[in-house]
Image 1: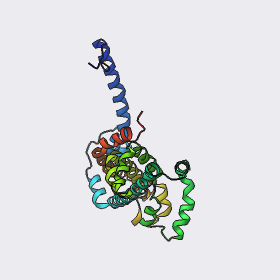
Image 2 (image 1 turned 90 degrees about the vertical axis):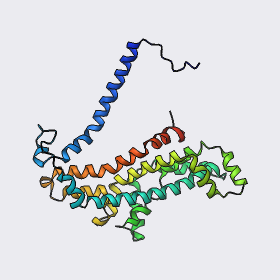
Image 3 (image 1 turned 30 degrees about the horizontal axis):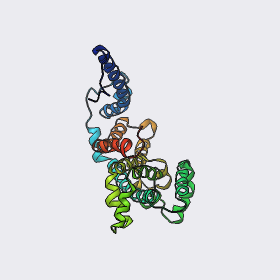
Image 4 (image 1 turned 180 degrees about the vertical axis):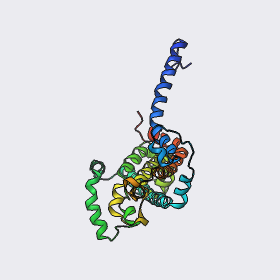
Length: 287
């Protein structure tokens, strides 16, 4: 019998340890969830209730704040802009990242390790260092203030290349070699053999980069000036300052923030299983 995980300690000691874990994790969970709870609660208050620090729960929930954001504000449009731009960007990043990761792992060519070193070296560059050359390139291509500019400038993800490469390295190379001997092209070997076996890595990559792109503020704010092209972070800022700091309807700002976060929570709720597997199981970075 395998007794590796047997626990022969006295029952009171095990109960004390369990209570300690519950206390620590519960406290951490409360501190983590409190900002979101406060945001939800504040979205149902009036402006006067929000400024009244002695009141936490709304005495009279203002559901009209939520409906106003959903039907009488540009926030849903900004959410749609962010969602579809993020989906297109992530799709392109998955394709480009998978092809390069496949080449680095399964193809033998001179300079393989050097190429990977160069790719990872660019990951150490501050993101801000790429803004000026990227802006100049987009200006020359007449892609400023457009969805095309946002998408083209984010086609490649260095993090995604690294993550997928780590997942691909867990696959026996003999499988790909056997597929090649049976007449499969590299393209078929990648998408019909390698990708299904590293599904969690792709989901992890897609989820993390979708959230990053969805919440991105600095780069989109530099190249888009027309409200029709605003992503959700720009839209929230414009919504926040439209009446000046002293005229801000804080309840509506909280309601807008809550509405913006909900799609991400739903997405993570449906993909958390594969996300955790991708981080700990297939990527080769499990502790």
